[in-house]
Image (cartoon, rainbow, N blue to C red; front, side, top):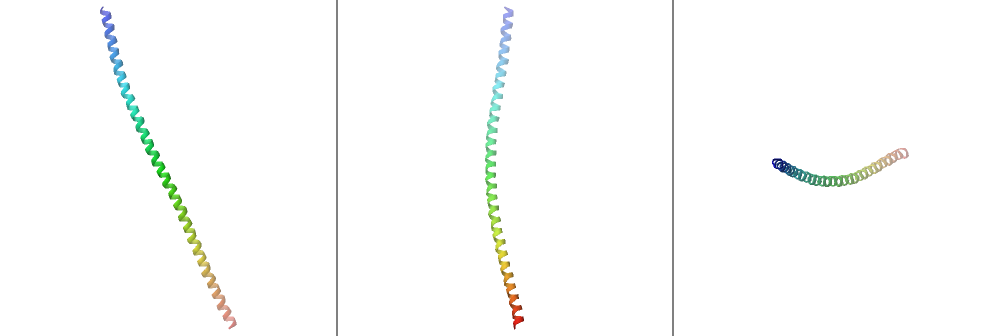
Length: 103
């Protein structure tokens, strides 16, 4: 009878340890689950930020292209204007030389 009582007591102790281990395992499982959910949320937030930044980069690139086109147009117009002025000066000089020789 004594051995049976010790065996029953040992099984009860083992059962308590198993219950404690399962409780700890469930707690750890819940912690890991919350950590995974948190990481998924952080990942989604980061993906949104990356997408927003990509859209901003695309918008900036488009703006840079437009600004570059405007600058090229301004440079071309100035070049044409300077060429026109140079041509007028050359014509005026030629006219002055022509008048000086044929006067």
